[in-house]
Image 1 (cartoon, rainbow, N blue to C red):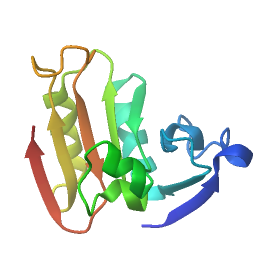
Image 2 (cartoon, one colour):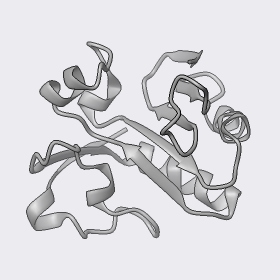
Image 3 (cartoon, one colour):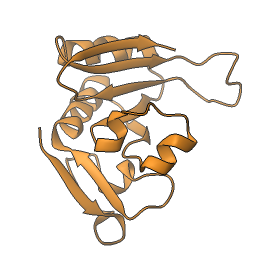
Image 4 (tube, helix red, strand yellow):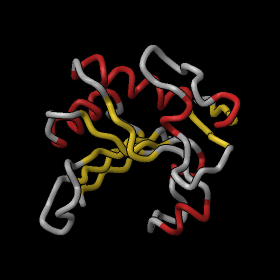
Length: 140
């Protein structure tokens, strides 16, 4: 596990893997600093390959102020660049999360956030994945 630091302004278009660029992991508050775990990118690349479709990252790295604004956990892996919330268009959250489980059977975080009536503007549900050393699973 290696977390790299990048400048969104200078390196936003830099390829981290065949399908992911630095800008996809940037904090939505416009901060220039972007932290990204290489293991996280590898996991997302493997999910993309298995799903045969694009993976859209909703949230990657977060600054502390942005994490607080969106109600993130105080010790969120997003703060460390080790987490991503994402979806695969046309693939159910349960299917994506089940595949992620095969990649992280004894470690990492996997959260399921299915589309529901509480979030009527949400187009789709999403999966949270992170590279923490312990194992954590949840459904919202």
